[in-house]
Length: 97
Image 1: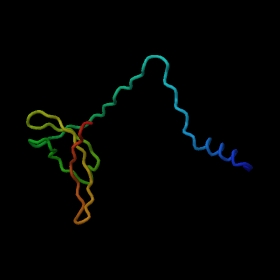
Image 2: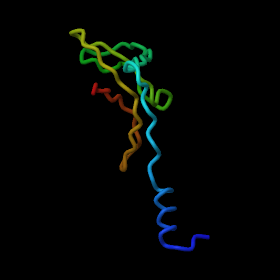
Image 3: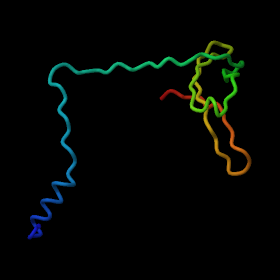
Image 4: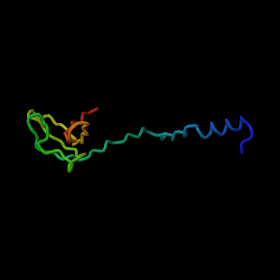
């Protein structure tokens, strides 16, 4: 049992303090290579929107398409919950950051 306010404050400060950071290696900087995940390429219309139907079976699926001028696009099948009317699934384009 903690008997003094000073001891209680010290215990609380110890418990609430952030964890110490892990030290980086002292040698050369370590650069992590990006992990590329294979995304299937599917047929698309002239604007690059997938012709494949987006629905419950493909919810969350990511695909890559090509538009009429050769531009590449990535889409994901997204479940949209509507307040009025039935739910629907739509292709949403994944924009690069």
